[in-house]
Amino acid sequence: MSDATQGPAAQGRPAPSRGPADIERDIEQTRARLAMNVEALAAKLSPASLAHQAQDSARRQVIDEQGRLRAGRAAALAGALVGVIAVVVLRRRARG
Image (cartoon, rainbow, N blue to C red; front, side):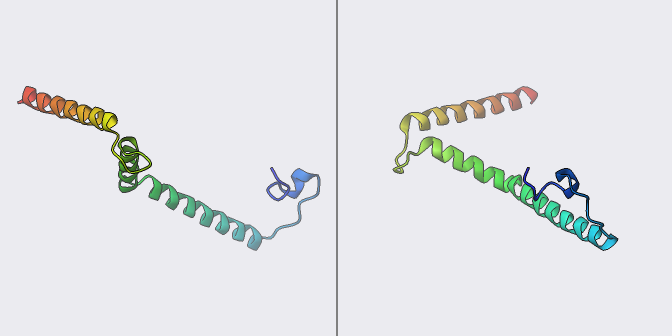
């Protein structure tokens, strides 16, 4: 930790006296930082954001850096998709 993040008492110096206004200001600053962190996490973990990340990941798997289709990977992905659809259809029919 840097000296700025450690309190004066942790550095061997006596802590300066702090009044209620100083403590309240620190609490408000901490609340503001926490609110920003929560908002950032909520945005990162939103369903739309996760779907976008999954889409980008899938696109990188089947398209190379020059924008050309990677035929082998695309075929494997298509095969996996067909398999998933087949399983879903069979399960629905079994529940019938």
